[in-house]
Image (cartoon, rainbow over the protein chains, first blue to last red):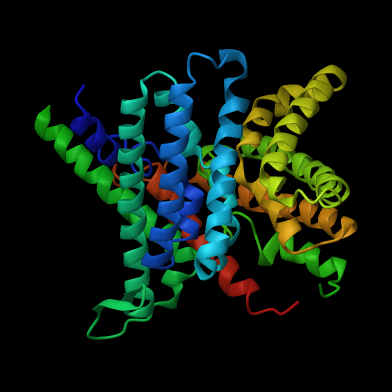
Length: 204
Length: 195
């Protein structure tokens, strides 16, 4: 078990969205633009890394019968911190993400990693796992956000910098409305399944 | 806060702010428990019940305990603990008094603690500053909206089990494509009718 492969695992095989299919609500709800996707992933990453470290450090003290309520309280504490920081320093971002910042507390990714990984491994590896899973989450959110923003508005604008502008403006407004989210994640999941099946057929 | 008619809040909860298709709350159960109508109905029943209770109790906790003691920053922690405790309590009561209901709803009750729809309805109640009656009405209507979509989705999925699709689309991608159509219907139909 070396740290680098543990880190990569969170992006590829145990990717929170395509591998484990956890945390769908924020993935679909806030990915109307790349900017929102980055803000959401940053908040989730902070909570995930901190809760992984805490749960792992306390894993010998937590009685297993009441471990889930304790995990939830640890997570809720960090989510409250994120919520207050965002509210104070990034009010536009807080307004755009709305109810989904406090809802990080019931994001299945975080409690899933606490239960499946941090509860069994030491602090350092839990930290690496938190980083890897957050990176996987960030990449998927940016991909979905990018596709939706590009097709929906014709350009990607992130923190006042225009990154890409399409020569023709497709303006498929549906893409930044709720149906676009379902369509994008369905198509991406079909592509991932197809690639996996091809790899499996080749590897035997 | 503008005084909003109860009927408007009711329609908001079911259609215009539909939790599953418009607001993306509670999607884990949306793709997880909709493989057949029976379990979708069981889950929906449990969600309506817990949402109505959670709206009631959390309103009291927020306005009668947290606001007078100026501890609003503890809202998130107290709500999540309240919902978890409430689900446990409901489970005990239902198991003791109505065993038949417990047999059909029992396995879904623990799932609800981490269902973001329940915490979502509580947080939306606080952020839209609803009063007591409005909170309860919004809780019930959000639960009914959830039920409507769960039943539609599970009905379609049950009938599409034997449809011949490429193997990489079978399962989750197929479910998401069905959800796309449903969501398109909801967005286009209910956003043009001002209530």
